Image (cartoon, rainbow, N blue to C red; front, side, top):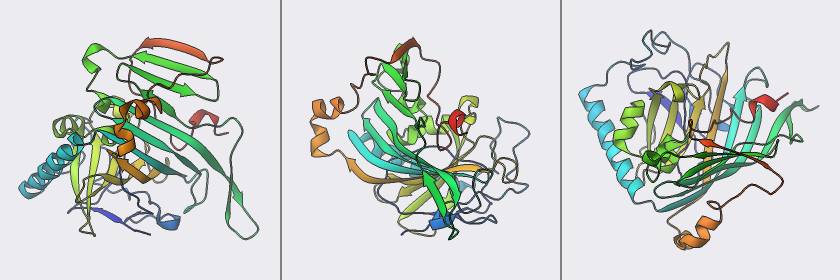
Length: 326
């Protein structure tokens, strides 16, 4: 099991995180904070300090200006990440997501766990699908947490075909299909809720996020934090902490905190890990087979289909469908 301590260079890290990226298997990682560390090496909520409080001006960076050395290092990381991303033609991986909510489960116990798959085909086709969810049922007689799948409870499932964005709601048997505008077709999958998974463009990342390098205790890992600049992104998450492989620049893990994260009033965050990563695999190079495995997905004949023009990226639930937790 790999354990990983997050701490921002020269400054305490705060707030919340957002976004998946492709990775090579990692068993677990921890954030070094004043909060209790999650069970099994999962992430703890970042401590709330004066420096981590929300800035008065929402359009200002939530941390002090980077030093010249930090900025140079960050530019090098983003450039190398972009270069690696350009070499990715296809990518597949499995993921696990642990959702922590201290109002729904005790400290050090996750409220629910989801497992699913991510797929990507350069430049603009992708899939994110939760295939299984279990939720906390309380503690057993030995003091261990109990979990079970709940009837009618499903996770997120969406597909980007390059021209359309399809959101599948398995609970209601409905599919929302949004037509992408011409200027977003063929290049703008970064507008998805998981831009770090599907593409890494240094210029667009800087336009969309305030990015901060973080101290890494392990030379084989690069750690960064990304804070969203746009309100549409802030509505989904507050900040994302990302662990990149220092050689491949493939993201290995991330922590995502709720948009209104607060360790006392809104103690919610998600921890993602990725395994079985296949980048430019021989099988995936047979484009027809790879595309048919997810890009050509259609809703079942008995589902209701709603069509509209694109009005924003699909939402990432905090661990599971928020409206169906009760």
